[in-house]
Length: 314
Image 1 (cartoon, helix red, strand yellow):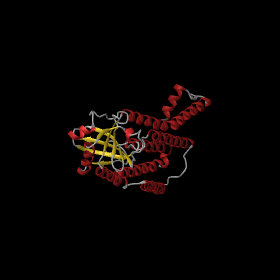
Image 2 (cartoon, rainbow, N blue to C red; image 1 turned 90 degrees about the horizontal axis):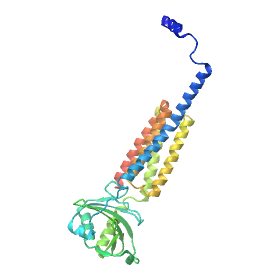
Image 3 (cartoon, one colour; image 1 turned 180 degrees about the horizontal axis):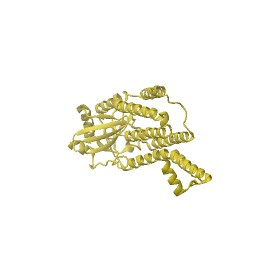
Image 4 (cartoon, rainbow, N blue to C red; image 1 turned 60 degrees about the vertical axis):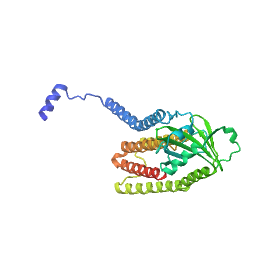
């Protein structure tokens, strides 16, 4: 080895290839580029994932609303049998929340024969009307109903349930129908009230408190088990974390303004992006301290609890 070094020195000379100032300049540039890459790589991944999610939403079911082909929901109900339908309370007349099973958080899915027959009878007894004639109609509740028939035909209805009758709006065609049957109205109102009582605001508060408590417990266990310190590893770590938090707030406000907060695909995709971005940041800046173990465990717990929550209220 010594002989080899001597021969190499004879060929190249013993003088250093770079001056001291040039070595420091090269080292400084490399460290600066590494810091810039480290600081912005994962926030940019998060932004890119959010943009892809929004693009998929715009191109997917939210951007391409299902259109019906029939001229009258009454004619369709007389010719075809209801296969299944979903329903959710929605007092906003400009939006429509119901969709395919599993599409909207909190909507109820009806597949039982008595439930399907009830909707079938309502539609068969509906008569064409004008909405302005119903100004004196006192609505007890407003429901969005998505229904699929045996021939796979889809209809979207807004039902304005009153004391003795129901006003139905064909959401796609903006046509209105009225059902003047007190017994059917009462039966349908009882169905909506029964399902609404299953999970109220108190249940959401309990779930939120339970989620926070489990998060705190898991965090405490993981920090003790792997000796993970609190605080930030560096300035870059703190910037990345707070950038992620700021983007989370902005996207959450956007979803609420757009009315997407109840869509399962939106919330699931949004939380997935958030949780995995947090894992990437912790892995980038704190893998030596095993900080990514903490974010991974919290992500698993959050996704499991969300899945159980959606399964329970659906």
